[in-house]
Length: 208
Image 1: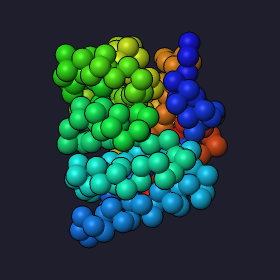
Image 2: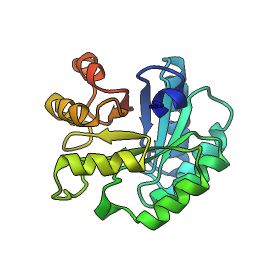
Image 3: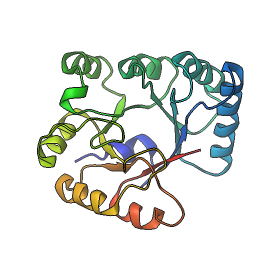
Image 4: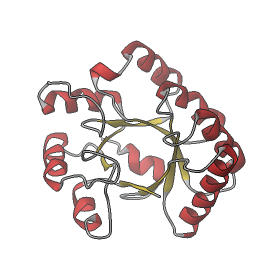
């Protein structure tokens, strides 16, 4: 099976920085995001996700516009307020992948999602299962993961919140059920746990 994480990043077990668009106002949010992208590239981070966590979709668009073709980072997009819109932005600005915090059935407009995947077949999707702040499906985990594998190119999971360590027990359980399907740890990675967590996963998303 093709590992679309390695295909997208051209590297084994990439480290992906998260741009949360923090700042005092729209201009400051974008300026700070560009500064963080410079730091990520200088420190040899493999990629970055630009997300409207503290900002707006327009802040994401402006950051993409000003950073386009200026970095060697593999760029991904996560529009929390409208994740489906990220496909078009990814193509427009030459990004490589989108992140959906949840690809679980209750959280997904399956018809719209399938149409977008057909329309943009070269855009990889990192899809959340058991992701922070998303609702439980009440399905067996094996069912959620099987559905997730059919909907995205890599599964992303986290602990209970932003910056909270993802339990290694959870990662090992996901790995056992996923086999060799790509698994990304999406929160709480730090110097004390990165080695152990990357032994289990195919990459890590780390906040700025």
